Image 1 (cartoon, rainbow, N blue to C red):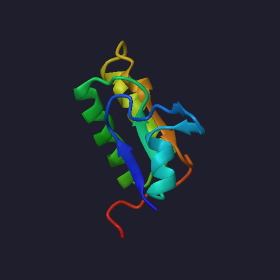
Image 2: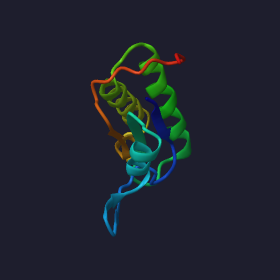
Image 3: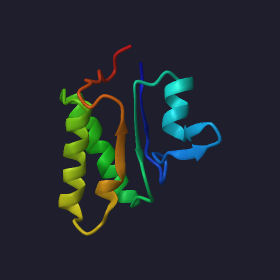
Image 4: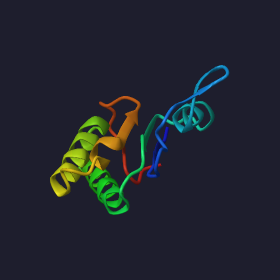
Length: 105
């Protein structure tokens, strides 16, 4: 099952709908059979968003679990620009202990 990473402003935000919670995470879990989803809860700084995704995927490629890759990528952004809240914007929906296999089918 896939990991979906939507590196866009507000992409990880859950919305309230008539029948419950909605948003990209809910839709991707239900309709795309995603195993995990990463998105930003608010507006993110473009250059820091690129840095986050590069660091996140590098850590996954090194064998880190999803939660550890998220923690490391957030810490990397905080070190680059401590006053910018982009490092806090990213959220993970899914099992933080899951290991992602990069490049396998």
